[in-house]
Length: 291
Length: 263
Image (cartoon, rainbow over all chains, first blue to last red; front, side, top):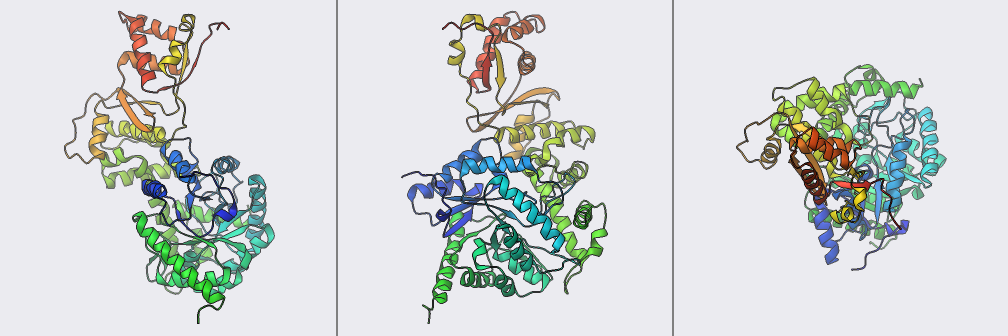
């Protein structure tokens, strides 16, 4: 089999999965057979910002066969703490090694005063926060010498001081900075439930050319609120919303995130097949091919 | 402090259990109040830290049991919250915390914490090409006296119970019967050879030699130490034996010496 490294953004298209250690062996075996129905992988950047050993070797072995993107959890773009340039240096070094199609993180903050809560904490949607985040996005993009993608996060409370809806904040941030969006369709659904808004209003407010990647994931519905757990299959309502997202944004690179109760690789590939099928139908409907 | 900064400070303080000011600044939804929803974040914060520590300290978690490990983890995180972008580093102070605040299974627990952490360190330490015996044999004879060695970054030494290796293996493989505790102050060495984690106890003379070499002393000094301090009857032979073992096991990353090398 020909082994190649790919660094072109256009190589990350179609349908991907989050790379998880429990699947390393199956992925490499499937790569050798050439019949793995996964087009690309997304890694959690921080898991590979390490010295060496098995994790990095497996990563590079898989990278030799698949395009990849990097997805971080500790950029803390919305924090009022100073940007962590040691972290950014490690991120840039990993990117130099991995040559990902793009680097993403979350529109959130993860800690202040030198602490890291290791959670994707919500921002108030205010002009003050928008100015602050935009300034930091500019700085990060300049340091990394590339556009970044920011993901809409799930949230459970609403700040009383928020002066605009989430979708307006995101659209305006993208307009001011040129950053692109990693649209997490599950998170839109979760927030629509938790904050009582129409998820289609969210999608309609995001400029069509802003969305570079889509996340799909499962969640835990507690009746009074939904928690974004990434430990279940994608639910039907999120699949429906995904179809609506495809209708609006087109054939955007799509992946399924699974972080807990991780099933065998083949189960996730079957779930990914459903995304393929939904995207195909939604695209066909968009161009009037479906009666 | 900016308004955003104050909001974030209040939110973080809520997660850490230091303040409830943030409750007044948010709202929930028609089905559930803001306080309950904020506790979703607080619960998630603590659960995530405990889970990360359990992953990095499987021996200690098995030794103490889930409930006691949970209590220990929460005490530790309260005293030393994460300051690194990766949870990978959260546990670096756990063994010292146990030294300061002993639990029921001490001193076994602190030794197990040191052992678990050494394994975690070795697992993803920087890849380095190990020096081979042939590299040493290629040196001029005059180089041996001033020979200095640097261990790979995957190498750690620690003090723990003499049964710790066997005990940890039994816990991880759920072996049922646990080995009895042994001597409490055994020196151990943990490293990675190729991609496999290795460990073994150090004999007293080897431990003394290891400390000396790790601190930058020469092979000549090591021979002298084994001769004088350890009163080893065949110090040079024993030194060569120790050196060969370190090289065979892939512990040495660099060598240097002061001897002139002819062109």
